[in-house]
Image (cartoon, rainbow, N blue to C red; front, side, top):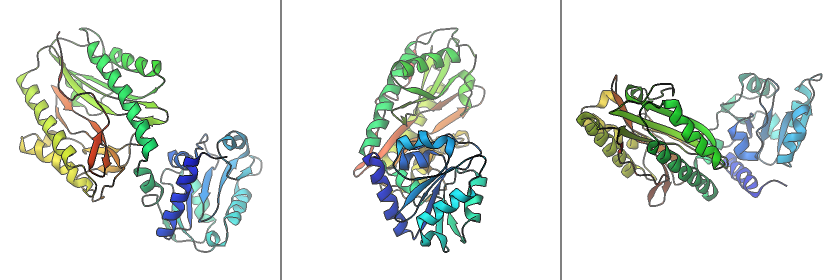
Amino acid sequence: MPDVIFTTRMDALRTRMAETNTDLVALGPSTHMEWLSGVNPHGDERPVMLLVSRDKAGFLMPSLNADSAAQMTDLPFFTWRDDEGPAEALADLLAYLGTDVLTDPSIVIDETMRADFAFRLTDALPTQYRRFTDDTVGLLRSRKDASEKAAIKAAHLLNDDAVRIAFDSLREGMTERDVQDIIRAHYKANGATPEFTIVGFGANGAFPHHHTGDTNLGRDTAVLIDTGCRLDGYPSDMTRCGFFGTPSEEYQKVFGVVELAVQAAVAAAKPGAKARDIDGAARGVITDAGYGDLFLHRTGHGLGVDVHEPPYITATSDVVLETGNVFSIEPGIYVAGQFGVRLEEIVILTESGNEVFSEMPRAMVNRPA
């Protein structure tokens, strides 16, 4: 029998399908499929889909994957072998879903699905009404429930410990990779898997997506650590900055501006606010301080099963935020050739405002050289 959480999510999707006049939702092997059903099979060139109508659902699945995937769900499988091809199995699945699906349906297609899978489906249906998952699965995923909130919190508490240990371990001559290894070892020792780790020494911190490398730590050097793990299916994401040795006046000034930008954005983050309002709160502080051209990216991104998912906190987004939305607030200032400062929190919107998942202070971490 399926986990009750997947039954609840399927019911919520069908309610949303009725509200949006949607006849069919088609998901490929993706985190959308995993979130809705608990199934996320190996994805290759063989067509795999979960198709959901107003009252039925079923999988198109290669035979070689079916037995394994069936352990996770009691939804029916319409299987096909390599020597047969998927056309007949897909036709059988569509017929099973009913006449509403077969007669000019309004369909939602997983935006992460392979194009050849999507075309195979649309070629089999007489419809001109198709869109992506923004107002169905995507919208539901953005509203985190209590179990998701607890999982994300646990991942962040573990992340806090890893980052504290990393800053405490700074020694002259060590490389960025050495720090990365310390962080990832802590994740693994506590039952988590590394999701990503950026360690930037000195000028490397001015690259927002720096690739952690073999740069050595010298005296009086800025250190940026942006890292996350995955624990029980959900990730963490946090950035903290500090200095190995004596921080320069300019670094301290920039750090202070970024901290004020985080505070402004956190204060603006509440149900009913538009995503652009939060970006504007952070960006306004940095622009007023004279560093606007050095804030090189959006203020944040949603976080859930994926580290990056809706809602996106950008200057152009009119998305109205809701209770249960989880997203990052991570303004930064990047001084080319010198250093970068980015401070990042993940927040969840509550009825009264928001909660921050990390419990590690954002204050500058200053380690003596």
